[in-house]
Image (cartoon, rainbow, N blue to C red; front, side, top):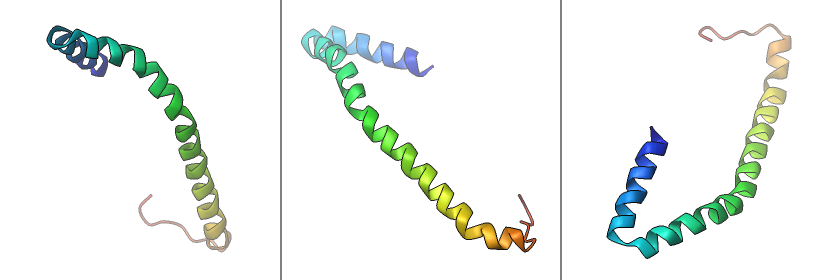
Length: 70
């Protein structure tokens, strides 16, 4: 559904201003490539925080603590 909305929005932009629509079509892959390292950093930081949380809760889990509502 998102792809359809994006396509219809691009078609409307193409009718209103075709140079801007073509520029957006050309720049979209470049912006995606530039944002890829930032996404990888975000995934890495999320994994790091999950690892730290696991280390911090390890003593409680070893002592038998369980959540009441998982």
